[in-house]
Image: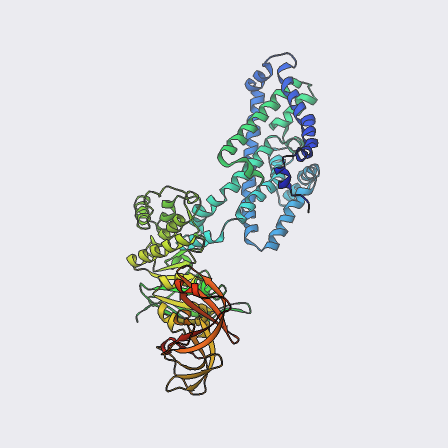
Amino acid sequence: MGLSLSALAERKTLWPWLLLLPLTIYLALFFLVPLIEVGIMSVTEPRPGLGNYEKVLTGSLYRKVFINTFGTALLVTFCCLLVGYPLAYLMSTVSKRAAMGILLLITMSFWTSFLVRTYAWMVLLGNNGPVIWLMTQLGIAEPPPLLFTRFSSTLAMVHILAPYMIMNIYTVMQKIDPSLIRSAESMGAYGKSLFRHVYLPLTAPGIANGSVLVFVICLGFYVTPVLLGSPREQMAAGLIGNQIEQFLAFGLGSAMSIILLVVTLVILGIYHRRFGLDKLYG
Amino acid sequence: MSAYLRLAGVNKTFGSFTALGHIDLEVEKGEFVTFLGPSGSGKTTTLMVIAGFEQATKGEITVADQSLAHLAPQERNIGIVFQNYALFPHKTAAENVYFPLQMRKVGKKEGMKKAEEMLELVGLAGFAHRLPKELSGGQQQRVALARALVFEPDLLLLDEPLGALDKNLREQMQIEIKRIQKRLGVTTIFVTHDQTEAMSMSDRIVVFSNGAIEQAAAPLDIYHRPATRFVADFIGESNLLEATITDAASGKAQSPVLGEVTCGAEGMPPLTDGQAVTLLIRPEHLKLSREPKEGRQNAQMVIETIVNYGDNAVVIGHAGDQQIRVRVPGADVVILKEGDSCHFSWTADAVFVLDK
């Protein structure tokens, strides 16, 4: 008989920890060290001090970008919820097989590369694309520009992030005890009040999980808003990229990165105190 | 008419599977009726049909002569306690109990006051503001009961509500439920597969088997005068022996194991000569002795196992191919040994005759 993992743990040998070593070294070398370096750069480049932070926190351009980033992240989260909740509900009510079918469709888009999906939206929404063509066919003489607007970047981000929302909500919906619904019905609860007083509160943890995940990912989103969004409505990650690639302003870019990181951690921290972070992944 | 709840020819099929054959049942107002049967016997399905969560394929259900046929579960005014209590985890005990009142548009102030009174009645004063997860299993059970009763339902349905509780708590809750039910006088249907629960709580027991009612009668009638072999076997411990009636007039029967037996229990079905029957003798009506006892009918058996319960014991033995169970007082068991041969005896009024 082989030894079980728990038996190994009881023996207090070192070697289970050895298994973790490669990952630990990898993360330290390629994640922690560069992160510390970013932190150092933010207070040393181009000269020592908190000048970079002062600039970011007081400059109107930077403030506008941060506000825009949060606004977009909120909008995307809200749209994901609007699209995801009914779909997750549908999945939880149909047969197991049908639910798997829907899940497959959702994850299929999930498996497609990020970049491919982003370019696909460029083709679809471009001036020579099918959407504009349809609009002219319908008699709209001067169709509004779709690509490189807040609309196109939001749409694409919702498309990319909705699966996170759907899967989080679906997991919670699936676990709802049907006798809770039956018992509510036996006590006289109909559709709307049943939803408001019972179903919605029961699914709230799924909504919270999905929203935090989507919001946090959205805060740091780079490729999609850069490629599809309006240059006048930049998001934080895009601006950081600009600072570093175009202006070689490593210090300023680093300070912005650290601020974004701190804000994200604060949001996760608030979530953790309220719900527990471990729930996000299981 | 006096029947309050009436099921007439209720039939339920799922595809080709018949869950309920043809259920006829009448329940008086204020009566405590238990549906008893093994799992899959149709007792829970019947309950769900009454509640409106399942539609009867055929037949009619009426409460106070009003048909329930076209009423949704929401409109039936029936209180239900589910097996797992089904309390809303995000609501406090009082909010849970207030919920059915809230759905009936009772104002928050008045409703919460009523909810707290109800919680007091079930013995949970002071727990109103706890969430379900902060309550023990027994306390959750009480909240569920309060919630099912607070809106003065026409019927109270309890679906194996004590299944998850440990033995002591179970007995305590049996007494509690009975007390509250009596006090409010609500017509109650209680589903269980536990016969001692059914015996101790019910005005009447309905025994289910294979989607049909085997017998509906008072607990002691069910025990002493079972209508079918299934009921005799399912309720309590029993010795069931094949026999043929030799003289119907004097209640004489011939059994391969017991020899000639005089049957004289109360309430037996009418007998005819030559009829093949089953004899029922409860283990507590048999006595063990070294020598045949005078004034009683005797037969011999070999002791195989003795199961001790402290205050009493069950002696299991064989008479020919037939297993015989005898319940003896705990003190008597010390003189008995496995492998001993002994006599067991009974009187005529302990022998009940079943049709088949």
